[in-house]
Image (cartoon, rainbow, N blue to C red; front, side, top):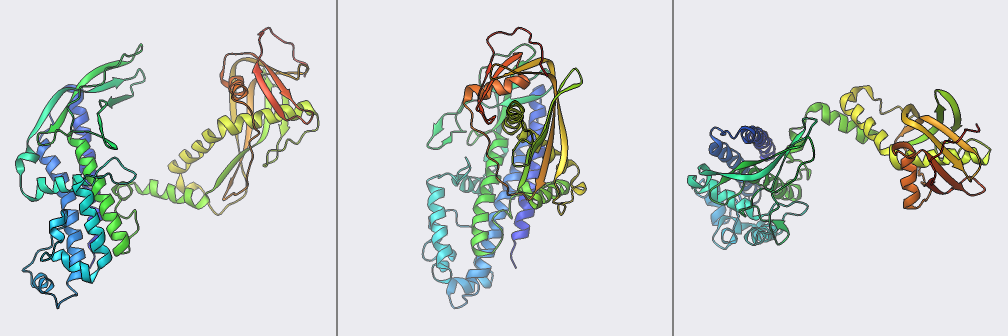
Length: 440
């Protein structure tokens, strides 16, 4: 029977313990305190990772070696006289070793293990990570050979990281810039904290870190890399040879709250999601100065060229600057209330976004008509499972900056240039900021 579920749960356990240790380290840094039994806690996490490889070795041996009972080593394994240890090194795959039997019983897996040991011995980087294959063999050595001095001996390095507290109360700890060796930072290097100059209200201090004596890694960083390496290496083996999903062992997914999993399931069910501007209304001191309806495909439902121009201007504003914000709000709502979303309801949903402006803005259209406003109402339509394409009108970078400034900048007057169909050619902050009397 596969031990995949045991591996998944063990990895989840190590991640929980890692998070607890990280919180304790962070608290200790703030007050220059200690972390009780820190070495034993690190050892617990690394031992958990090592046990996952033990489970994998047993699964490989049970499925691909024990069934070849005519081979001497297989018979010894079944009889309990030969133990299965995960092959971290090429010597463990040579003729006469238990896993050499794979060369005949499962040649593909044998070749992959030979390749894996080569990656471990040359410390290659695991794809899409900054963790190396070599760390697996290293923590195997720390745990399996019982070299307790490498686990239980930690040291404190002062002035090791930069702690920043912002006026809002938010805080973060910034690690120093490590030198690079090959494709990854050298986390064993002895580097001092990054020097920073704080702006008013920002508090900067330099804090210490807890490190493993044996390799000079910061303890939580080393544990995190060990967890990631274990998950990545075993996921590949089990997905190819035991039929598990490639993300089955992902401890971040396993430990995710059920509410978050439900929200992600809802988002997956309703994707792709499309949100586009359906109504734009401009108000000047609470009186309507302009209003236009817009099709879901972006076509203004007005006839005057100047009105089309303003409608196109705010379609562009929403698509470039507010659409992602609107979708982010929808994602936040789904994560908070996943049960309230009916993913079978594909009818368009309507919501409004109100943007009050600190001062009146004037948009001059082709040197003539002026539209003045100090509040914007954007009516937004959202469709689930929507494949409709929407082409955002092209515009140069300078004009795009002016479009954003209409809503978020201090400038008060803007020149809008369009063609005879109302399509935007350019937008610019006017050179003069004198007040203009509205004509609508």
